[in-house]
Length: 403
Image 1 (cartoon, helix red, strand yellow):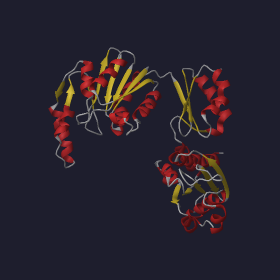
Image 2: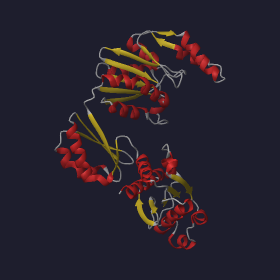
Image 3: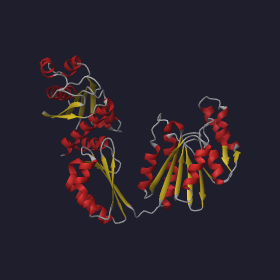
Image 4: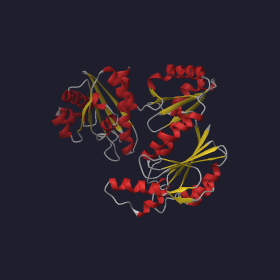
């Protein structure tokens, strides 16, 4: 089975908002054997939405529209959808009363604009929204199932999880075997060069999916044995660059390893400004292994809080192997943990020299007294350098504790 996604919103086209909905939906659909073949992003225009619906009509098994179901004047998805399926909109008094009671319980009089959300099509089905006020919609046209869901991520995800995905799971083919091998630390071209011989000799569908933080390798086939054999061969060739499978993130993988081994960590950050601590603590239950972190941006803070020696800073500088080493040792000592991790570097865009250019980063790791420091030279872009530094630190941690 295949699917088309239509993502709606002027804010997506103007660059004010990133489209995370289609990424989430594509992954969820793939998990049950449904491939997303096309994604369209259109503005809040009734004609544009109608054109997009007509362009995918009769071409895909499933079409999902996301966005444009709110109460404001530019929320026109429902009107376009009704014109497409040949339906009228009628006022649902019972739903409006339910909506009014929901607002009343929050101590708010329902705004007049929310009346529009009580208009429902005369054809198709209504999908309940347990997280918001916009109802979802469903209509089966010939062999295609059309779904309309809110653009608010939490509402879309809940509606998909509670209603749409269970329904599609019952009709989706379950003989498609899919696994995603997640890698970091090796660029796509080098990865392909290493794997090209085994990729060319297999009948398994192999996709390289590069991202900012690494490359995912997706294997899919109806032959389970072939997928398992190829996966095993990939591990043999690039095992140290693989941190997990399917949708587990690097921070989740690191957290799992720390929990399994009963280890604790503490973090000292300079140029990343707390980004590494943020990623670690985004994982539920991270308090099992994360003791705390310090953002020691200023040299005096490095001395006072971590015990970095004045001589080290004066002789080698804040961005140096020696300072990163003492920061990692210091934060482990302060928090009395098993592991101390440190990051110090030049995020940019200024502050670089010929000897120490923008993007130069030192990452230290003190594992119960055994300390290593690695240096990296990333980009000229400040945000990229911060993100890549946190990623590299997590990967060093993974390799250290996971072998």
